Length: 252
Image (tube, rainbow, N blue to C red; front, side, top):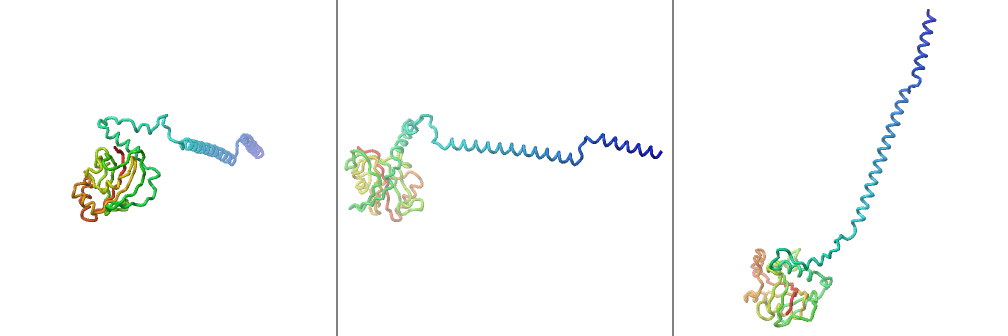
């Protein structure tokens, strides 16, 4: 009986050993799972690297294609400045734009030229020689762009003095027009303009004594802005030296 029982147990163990011999052990299962996980991680990493490299390449291409000059679709932008402005019935906006185009900064404006002093006490410095045959002389009808600065009110941003008047802010067409010698503006200012040509730029300094006399004779251009009026009134409580920046736009 005991021998039969032992035989039966041995047979049963042999049966189970044979039945489960094809199954992987727990250790093998863990190793297999880790291998699969590692393989999946490697695939994800490779795909991520591919996407990053593709995005970097696309960005480089965009940068290279955008470094050139902007496309103008075959249109010359400078030619557009001569076109009339819609709704500009008086022509003011068109005229201002044309003047700005013609009279913009030039390389020769930076030349360092000394001031020339005249017998009246006024002095001037020529920043730009104009062009053309016509020159400013006594009796000439001229039009100018002008800025007037109060020298005694100089600041870090405006070392030549703050502006109390400019044709851009205080006139309709960004210019003053008058006849040289008619007494409308100070004669010392006109004296410093003699010989200028169209497009020429001069900086003219009128001493305080000349400015006070010009105010008495109503020969100074008057501002229309609130700030300009305030500065103009303050000017005559101190040194009234004025700096005129003049650009000739027309001579007849």
